[in-house]
Image (tube, rainbow, N blue to C red; front, side):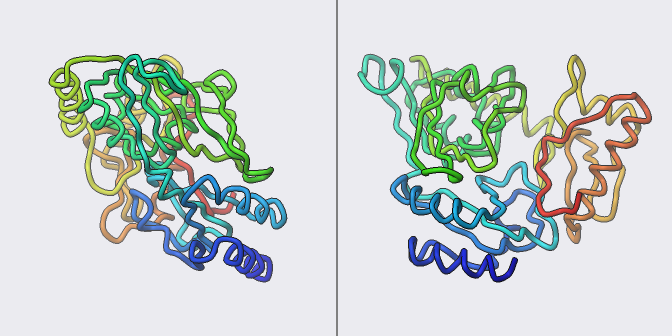
Length: 315
């Protein structure tokens, strides 16, 4: 594996000079602030870089990890022995078109690169008098992550506002294609995107509204989040809600608020949040996730499905 990664690094560095680094700590790229380094990290700045990256990925077939805002990632303490991909530059651009503007989308469309933070998307749209995207202010992920996971909150989901996503397959040519929600197979916290496919951008629908009204809705979501969800080092909701129920309710009913493994603890404020205290390890968090899963299964018979992506751990 070491020789393969050395070859991978050398070829990527030749094709994308200055964009590739070795043994990069991933903790700073995640909201848990935990975990070891990635063996090779490439920072992609434009769609023009994708074919070269795809050619190397297709040849070497390394394990791939796309890192957006890191808000649903738990990286193992030993790190990730593969290739991490971060979108930057042109993928951080956002365009808001007014009503009646012809272009690649509906009237009043909002186009955002895959690396645009969702709170930025929500606030920029609101400031431009565009409504419909306010719910994104409470989701600390990226546009690419929102499409991949059909992110949602406050009664709305990505599939309701998405016109199309721009997707590149790094296991193929790297060519960017447009896919609508149906073609993406969006469901509850799910898409049909494969492990080598990356969302490089998306177009969202929105409607005109009073700026003050839009910004008031954003402020209310921020207020609600601060009141009902904990701060600190966490990755948001750890488990998806089962049909007709709430993961947080099930965890609370099992008596697990405040339950701890090492430096990881189930939040007293919201039971579907697991916080990492000072000195916590990624192994602590993973062990707590598995123990919560086990105890809820014993208490209610419900098998909770993690939304949290746990990377680099043994099965």
